[in-house]
Length: 181
Image 1 (cartoon, rainbow, N blue to C red):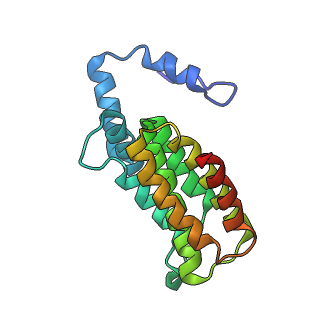
Image 2 (cartoon, rainbow, N blue to C red):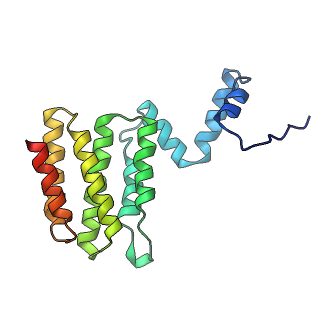
Image 3 (cartoon, helix red, strand yellow):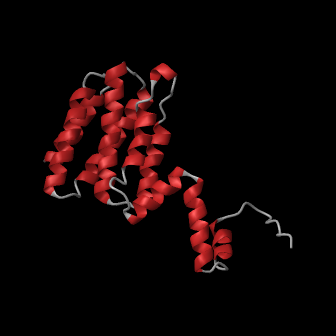
């Protein structure tokens, strides 16, 4: 029997209606197929269920790839793809300590890349400052021990960022002062 073609682009409502007809075995088979189809699906499920020694590892690998590319291979940076990794983790698990860790890691890798290769891009710097601010907001909600450890790491990012110009380090100074008040 031929399936009817929807008049418009399929949506979650359409998928949900199709899933309603699945039994437990069918749903497990579908999830298994999705798991096998792409490593992003595997990372999502591992994070959602807390499986593995380090559920943040695949997200950090993505951040590392897009924030500190191999310039000898002509790889590009991509703030969008880096931020998508954090967004994907947020959807998979969203655990605050994990989000804060990814945000701080983002800042470390972005600042490290700029410092290491002398990368000068205003948009990249703007994204770094915005992520620094988001990281501080996430960190503020953590326990004192976790908060102090992550703030110390962001402080190192701040110090490195003073070498970039564009007011990056100054903006970070201002944000850290506001956190400590």
